[in-house]
Amino acid sequence: MNVGGNVKAVTMVVDDEQIVQESVSRILEEIGFRVDVASRVDQALDLMKNTKYDLILTDLMMPDRNGMELVETVAREHPDTGVIMFTGYPSVDSAVGSIKLGAIDYLPKPFNPEQLVDVTERALKKVVALRREKEAQKVYEAAEKALGSSLDLKKILDLICYSSRDILKVKGTSLLIRQKDGPFLELAASYGLSDNYVTKGALDATRSIAEVQLSGKGFFVDEASFEEKLQYPEAARQEGIVSILSFPLSLHGAVIGCLRIYSSDNRKFEQKEMDLITKFSKQSALAIENAILYETMKKDIEGLKKYMA
Image 1 (cartoon, helix red, strand yellow):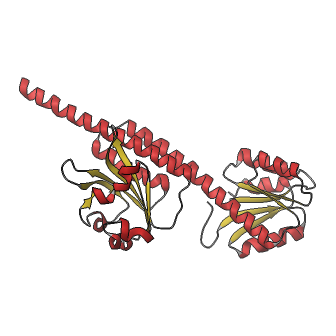
Image 2 (cartoon, helix red, strand yellow):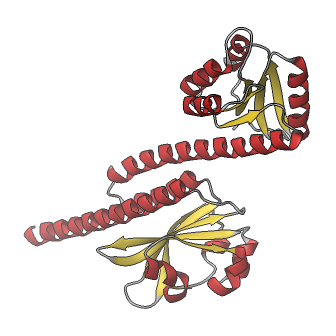
Image 3 (tube, rainbow, N blue to C red):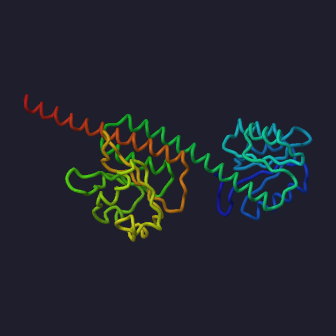
């Protein structure tokens, strides 16, 4: 997103009426948006050649080309930019038509400042979520490819941690594996966390991942439940952690550990993000299994060579 300093988003208002340009610009600038203006569709398209916009608010009826053409062009050539359509000639057909062509929302004229702010903020959230989903999918595909091309266990463990952090854009991640004997978890790898935090003490699997084992799904813990759910709640707070999301690592139906995601804000994860990281945790478990089998096979071959020497 084109956010820098105190600018919340970069927007453009496209309307042939100067009073609309000025009033919409003033309202959006008051809530932290940078606003450019255009009076015609062609002018708007020229501005888009040099500036990446987060949102475009366009009128339906204009002198040269109508707003529908702008919506269609933006959807085709600038899919990461959201469009809000507003018009003084509201109808169900025009609203449905603009949404079908790619507009995020629709606002009939006249509208008051509260309605404009509400629609614009809602549209921006959609744009941010869409961009995040696209970026997460891109990172996931690269990570999946990398996992499938390596049998080096340490490399795979590190790759799982920093890839999952990049997929969700969070503070840090860790990979915890259950010990064969005993109820404890062992840190296999981490990324984005301090040494003090990752070496804070032994983790009891019956407490740390009990819910993950029982459900076999991702388990979310927010700061309000740290005292109840975490062994080291104060250490988490000192690390700047606000929430923890844990996903099971399962092999042949048995949970061997978990992938843990640490956030430093009150971020809510979209369902598509949850689905993606769940899928990635499953791929990660398979990659770990393949690497372990490879390491075992290497040792067997080395032992055979010594025996035959």
